[in-house]
Length: 191
Ligand code: ADP
Image (cartoon, rainbow, N blue to C red):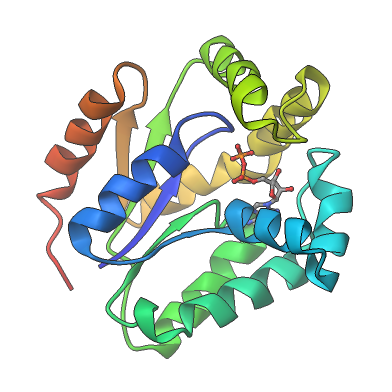
């Protein structure tokens, strides 16, 4: 099973990714989490990524692509994976196509969580209080939403044209959203 979960900042991708990955017994690969782990360990990659993340900008494609390529080459990702936060640009879509083709597999589905902008700003500001993420400030959230609209939202049409898109309402209780995703995914054949 090879899946992508997409949605604007604060849509709840990470929360839902865990449940989906557990259900299919595949790793949830979050580029944001990998970057944050590198930032806290002070690696070279972390130092580079932090400059962009703190400003709400995307980390350059070359850096992100290489990181994802290495991660999905790990043995645990051989039966499949769920990508959270990747691809985010058209160039990353192409890169991922190459990576998956190389393994002789195909993408099964792309789940998009749809949410109301104002609602998610509230969620993110609340998360700022509990998790203290450096990029959950009002200004940086605005920039992340902007860049999502410019760079990432166009990917939805790309995957819709390929017949892979599953749109799920991301508002409401966490468990209800998970159930909607599972209902929608049951129609997707396993590979
Ligand atoms: P959110 O979806 O809430 O904005 P993430 O945890 O997915 O948060 O990502 C945090 C930050 O990590 C992004 O704002 C960006 O700087 C960087 N990042 C994550 N994934 C990518 C990617 N695929 N391409 C470029 N930058 C990325």
